[in-house]
Length: 275
Image (cartoon, rainbow, N blue to C red):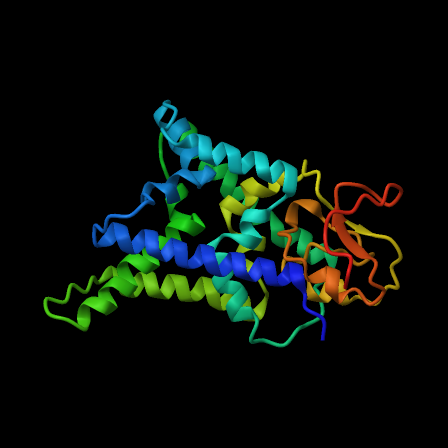
């Protein structure tokens, strides 16, 4: 069995960033001294920094990191969603225990993607009017809230002076509902609801890195394995919905799928061709 190198790299990245996220939240909760500031999570979230800057009419300090991530998205595509986001990583882990199902039709996928853009637009409009609502559905905030309230409360119950917050139950249920959606449809939250994903989808339309299929045998493996439903019935794909999970490279029965900077003519491929 050959090693799926790019998939393995993605999984390692997801694991590292997930535990890094936990470390940052933990150090902030218990005021531990460390090299990483808790503000890093906020600065790395363009949805939060941009909406806060627009709402307050002031450029938020640290916004440069968010702008860098947006620029990288315009070059690479939605790498953050597939390789870094802790909520997305949690859903991928849960979805890995379910059996693979056939992909849903393109028409349904297209309709399923729309709500997140409406939510993103509502957040932008609210920011212009001076109201901040981005934190309600932002994936980093949702994960941070779950870790801070639920896990901290659970740990506190094991010792003296337990500090169990009534909001922890609500937070746990909300987080569980989001993650459980992945059992029925992989990355449902990312496909249909996530406003940060909508922002990245807008930027990913311009990405230079692209998926290239040279000789398709119409086996349908790539479509059924695509966790975002980004691959269409004709094996082409919606670039703005691809989160670079790299599964389609190894699921291709003709070994003709790759990601690179070129096209079918130049064959200037960047990524794994040894599968």
